[in-house]
Image (cartoon, rainbow over all chains, first blue to last red):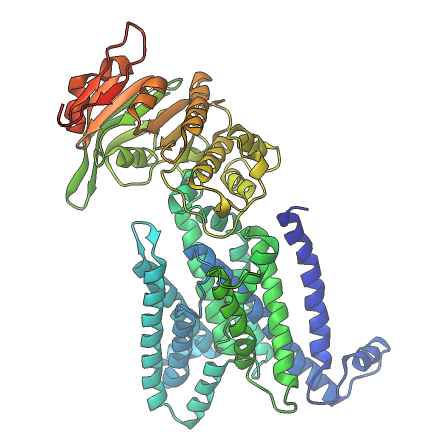
Length: 344
Length: 260
């Protein structure tokens, strides 16, 4: 079986796994509400208790949906970023795009009071994700401009510029933290650690359309990213509109990362570990890879959230800590493997 | 239905790398560009492939290449770059198929396999591209170009292959293999534009030889006419002696040792 055929078969397995994790996730939690009995009640026409309705519908379900969306967004954002920079180590988190999105969110939280009334009125609850989106977009654009000269992207420049950008975003965030009040500080801490704790249907509806749109957009540039793997000049020679592919990629990364950071804070390593694992298993063809990345990203974040909620229940660990603890060793392993020090 | 370059000027910063260059290349022929390092050969082929901004005009089969959409050009010509990079661990066959993705979409009709067989690498189809030697990688890229252009002549006229030093990292047997493929393409009606370094190999295969130096064309014509002591020595800036072959035979050159 060719690698592409295997990758397509993986779509099915991952979809089933995501469904399974979804059901598990709905039934696991701090309170003793189980999905099975609740579904039985619904099926037999009995009404749910108020407790069951709130726990399942208002707490667990939006959190699950948000987690799956954010996982898919982060993984696809990573895969697209890596395709754009032609480097498996590129990641919205590593090169400061997440920091830019986080800064955008922080600006919106702390300075929301200063926004003109018409803006606050028209943006409303969308202000934070919108601002995070713009922050991520600006970061990605600056990064791309700085590290690309005569159509060639320098990876070293990209990483250095990303670090510099991240540091700058950190410093600006620091200034805002300094002037923030107590309530704002609590909100801000949430960004640093990453959490799905505040999930609500409003957040799902806010971030959902942006994330879904960027996932669909990413799906249209699979061929383009394959072509870019041959270098920009060759990608144009085989008939690709390279500039359009690059623009779509940049916008996709910015939108997906921005929306994900806006609703869940900075959650690391999904964007780098997921595409790499998939490339090892089913090859680098971006057409199946992007779909599998969305599914595996959703799956891993769903699992990570179950761990985050379950490991010290009824309290919970910020999910960013879980993904970092699990992801960092995998990331190191990738680095070592690429240097030929570990032969696996 | 030919490649016509007029008044082509390309600048890198202030430096004029190509200066009002003119060139005609016909389908059915191998047109070889030769000249010393820095004479502008690669810049010329890059401009012809649409990689660089330029002043002047370049038309391929009557199509202004600065205005044509990438897909239209891709249906008309394939490009073998001098050096190829590849991100990510693609298999050899996948690299060839990438060349097919943007244009025809006919991914499964065996073109990639046929093209790999022509360059003698079908047995390596499922190896990682990065595992191959530099010369083998160059042949994989040639297979990618062949799969892309496929027929030397389409319904809309001849197709072209642009080769930037196609044999630079190949042993002599594979140099001949690649040049035979190019000749075959030309004999069947396609156009070939190739940047070459090896003058003797060029003399063996080229129908038209274009000698460049300092950003302009010094001489152009059949190798027998162009390969003279005077033209080559002036272009390369060193003493070269061209053998005087009997009428109709292929000339070859020998460098003079500085002391002789």
